[in-house]
Length: 144
Image 1 (cartoon, helix red, strand yellow):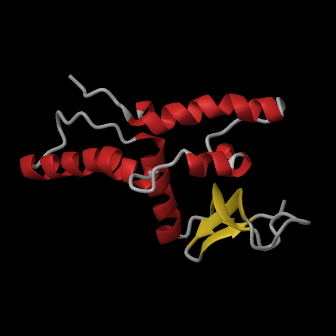
Image 2 (cartoon, helix red, strand yellow; image 1 turned 90 degrees about the horizontal axis):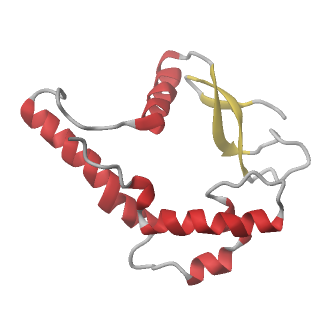
Image 3 (cartoon, rainbow, N blue to C red; image 1 turned 30 degrees about the horizontal axis):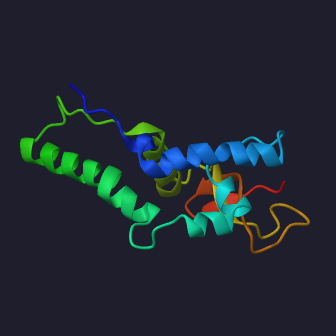
């Protein structure tokens, strides 16, 4: 039977989901996301983080290990048949991104890039998530 996906049941995710209520309390019109807690509650996040085991360490010990173990097993067996592995949307996205760059498709994708004028009246050096056309030269942000 497929192994249960614990990716979003890790303690850091549980805490992230709990913090959404605080973000909502600040502005009920905000569409909550898992990043806002870092911007709106940075002192809280630092005080409740473990510098010896960061979110990156959690990913490496969890999802990354699972992916690499499965890749080794598939390589050893010479087939992915019967492998209980779920790639998910991020895996599909990264393949689409690589293809857009490799084959210069000019595909429109939502990416995080340096502002550089994509959003007027906003810090030029800020990282912003905006639609981009992606080709051999990488992302070209569309002006907002």
